[in-house]
Image 1 (spheres, rainbow, N blue to C red):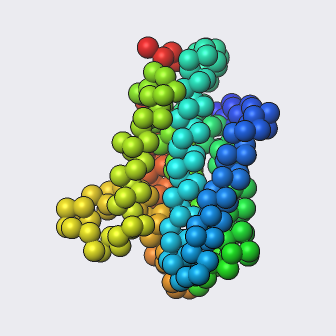
Image 2 (image 1 turned 90 degrees about the vertical axis):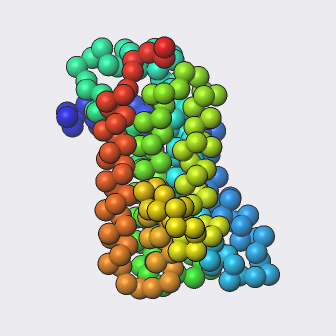
Length: 244
């Protein structure tokens, strides 16, 4: 790993994002709009928003980062940019880590906006530290970035990259406890949810909403981080220069 190369890749990605106003708006504004829409829907029953809001603070960044990263990386490959970059003295892991670092910085801004609006303006009831809510959102968004980088290696077109959403993201949303609490799922589905990383992000958010104790939250964060690092390692192992 070369830190200088990683930082150069991250700076390049951030410059591209700064010039792509639509993608930047999708990354920063869309999660805030969706959470505000949910609050509006349950304006008459705020207890429902308090139950669903923490879980959606984990789901929305994960979903958006996965989608944007998988399509952006594929565009780099199909346009020949990735091949030119890897022709330089740069490892695949440096490339992926640079991407993860750049999108992680964007995720930090995204998390600050989403958590600030949810807690400060929409009165989301949280018992634990609000700053830790933001940390979970950032790590969760980095996880979505890492998985997006990984699956992009198996897509040939941007349409195929989008097709990974129902295969990789939707099952995690269905089984993460957002719709049915995980302890009420059938035993097999409960076991499956235990090996899906989004489940730990939602668990961490819900714990912060219900209790001031943070011990289990840090354990969940460690699991999410391990999943993200594993996805980056697999992405480096499967990254191809060209779209076949």
